[in-house]
Length: 495
Image (cartoon, rainbow, N blue to C red; front, side):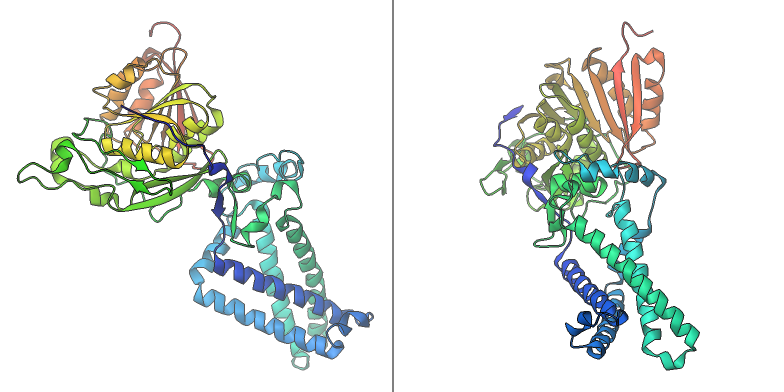
């Protein structure tokens, strides 16, 4: 068992990348062009106020510049759709995708946006944009399309009957005022003048990053998504027990001042000293980083870049080893966020199958005293390294469910955590046997599961009074496919 004490946490001040450089430049171009078109259009339409057009050289120059800048914007829009069709399609899909639950966002919006001292979190919603942004995007696109179509008509009046020209002029003028209203509302929110939107102006200005706390408040689902090339990769259909036997040898990761991961060479059997034995894959050889917002903090986790490269046929034959610990799974994110929100400081917390350690780190940052365990020594080494990167203080132990001495030494625990551990049929019976030895009637067990079929037998077993457990299950707000199961021991002996 290893005990880690770490430096103070600075993740709460982190900022998340919201928009890239290309998106920010395109936003600036469209925004400035639209403002110019709105002003020049009003100057042309309001002929009774010649002072407006005089800024642009008079009525005729204002009309000419308005026409050609408008045509230029249409060309830019066409090129954007052609050259970056995938990004344009994603923008459109994110803008039109509404859910029934979005209604609650509008009900809670005033409290979130206008609270002066401590803005309340926005009601939960899914996607890159909140429901208000989606409506704005749709109205803005419609306004620009209408203005473009009617502008083309107004540019060729001799080819249309007077009625068509007249109606086009009325629609063009009305849409211009609608566009001005949209721009005014957008400026109010994007400037950060409203308390709930403080810091949001960075999303499209400067470096395109927003404070993690602001992102977690305004876009909770987006802010909670793991970031990285392999963040959305699914676990294979065939999965084996994450906690069966301790591997020989142990690699320990230390952290330098510049946050690089330094891993000493393997020891014991992992050193590859056996004659004729294939070298064990080194998980520290090629690392990647993912970030995820938990409890208003941006937590950064390192992990092997390619978990499949860690497959060891000899280890699999001997121990049925598959390195699922080397990836960050949505269940771990969901469990970590639940822990950060609800775990009081000072509680004794144990995590089973900790993997990269996100739930354990979240509990430690919330003030809990944490022991993170996994059957894989490499997993607990990565957990310790990730704790160090995020300023968390916790202990780690490599042990199995069938040899749980380090876990039992400090039982009963106030809280036992497990994320996505019920993906093999034999996991359930072993977990049912272990849990009563870890918690008493005052403790709880939290299990996050994405609906694995083997989990059904475990859940059925804990649903009956004779099991000795009381269970409450809730759907996760950020990942609807994940359910958080909270278990307590029934008072008195099981009947």
